[in-house]
Length: 181
Image 1: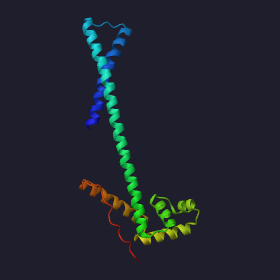
Image 2: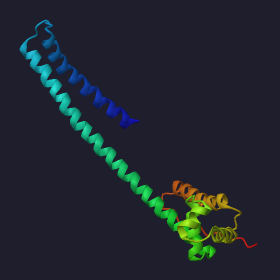
Image 3: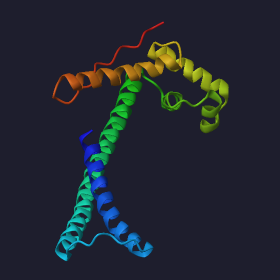
Image 4: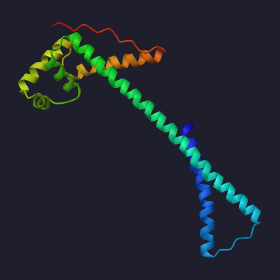
């Protein structure tokens, strides 16, 4: 909110100064005569407007620099979160004892690809992919894709709550043992 007010203030100052200069030119072109003011007053008004425009450029640059810094910080947080999610996936896949093929299928499933799309990407039949997804669900102790995905979302939410509650970086949660059927 504070940043928005800052940007609005910059725009108001620049708009006022621009209106001052443009109105002077337009009024002169249209032949409107204004009550004469002393040249000293006119010069002071022009200097003030020029300073306002220059100040607007400086403040605009500062606002731009701040927003670039904030964007870079957000991108870094996203990169870390992506890395944490990939690390979480690998930990879970290892704890469930997934084969390399099952890891690929699980990753594609979590990304939201259909059985047919996964089969095409892996150059296998849909039946093979279905068998692999069933093995993944069995090893993970879930009954389907939504529950599989919810395991990871739950862990990420637990990490976020833990991180918010403490100033220390979040530690990985213990891996839940896979349910045996």
